[in-house]
Amino acid sequence: MKFFFKLIFVLVLLIPSFVELNAQDEKQTNKIINLCGARFNVLFKEFANPIDISPLCTSENSSEVYIEFKDFSAVIDNKMVVRVIFFPESKNFVYKGITMTSNSQDIMKKIGKPEKEIERAEGRGYLWEYSLDEIFSNLYFWFDADMKLEKISVELR
Image 1 (cartoon, helix red, strand yellow):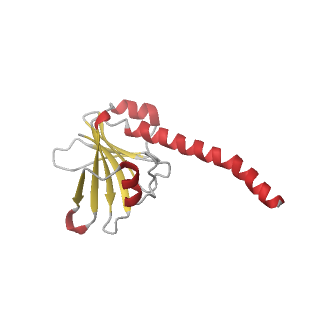
Image 2 (cartoon, rainbow, N blue to C red):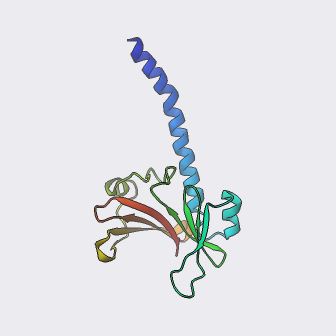
Image 3 (cartoon, rainbow, N blue to C red):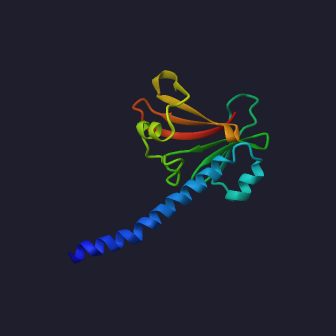
C-alpha cells in the first residue's frame, strides 16, 4: 500500500512537468513554423548559430541556402525563410499533438484528412499536404513506402 501512495505521489509531481515540457515544445515548434516568410536575420536572432550552412543546388540558377540547426533545418532564398524542415531527430517537435513518432492515423485524428495526397516518385512513399493559411504556407508530412513518417516540412506558398 505504501508503494501505491509513493507511486501516486511521484506521478502527481511528474505529470505536470511533462505537460509543461510538451507545451513548451509546442510553443517552440509554432515559433519555428511561423518563421516561414520571415527575413533570414530573424531566424539567426532567434536561434543563434547554425550547425551547418550549404548551398541547395536544386537548379543551375538556384539561390537557395540550406541551414541546419540542432532541432530543425531551414531553406533561405533571397534573404527569406521559404521552408523549415523537421527530421526524426527533432525530438522537440509538437504540433497540435503530433510528434515525430506519430503515425498516419494519429495525424488524421488530430488534423483531419490531407487536402492532397501525392505519391512520391519511384514508389518512395507519400506526401500529405495541408494549408496553413494564417502564414501563407503549406504543411507537408513525408512518409516512406511503409507509411512511416520521414520528415515534416512547412513551405511558403
